[in-house]
Image (cartoon, rainbow, N blue to C red; front, top):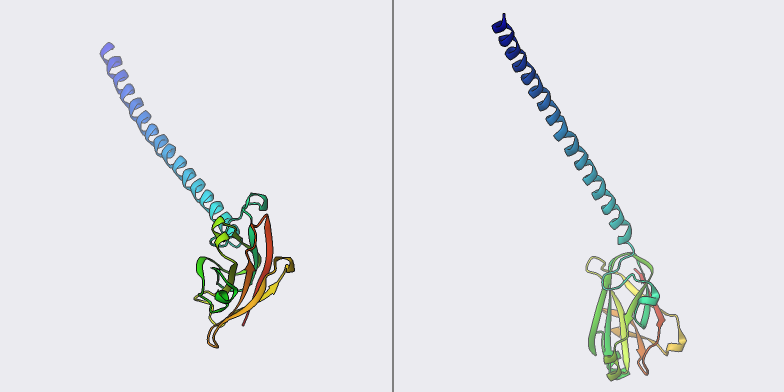
Length: 199
């Protein structure tokens, strides 16, 4: 009788152990799968939110400029850009007015800012101490590589700057430019002109 009870208890113990192991495996399988699925869902959600945010901010970004608040930006000249396609804004420094007017690439190349579609986008050309060795800043725009046939017309916005229009180049490649006198250091941000794309 005692042997029978002993054997029965062993059989019962083994069957309980097996069922515990099987249920443990089921729990482990479910336990690993549920957090993994949850992690994948969370990662895709976060990635979607980040991409959505970047895409919404992209239209306000212009290569070579800053989107900081006006008070945090350096002093300089501001040019307004209106374009339905890609563009480049080119900057040159000249020692004389005639040097500036002698051609699109005359003077010292100072910088280039590029961008895509823009409406009343303000592009700041920050003032630098090196400008004191020059008399004029020349700025003009030309279409980007994918925007052939576009020309940019200039409208002066501030007569107090002494800025003037100039047409540069030959019949094949004419550009309307703005010549800004550099008589004294610039304080604050001075809006000078707008460039408007036309076909």
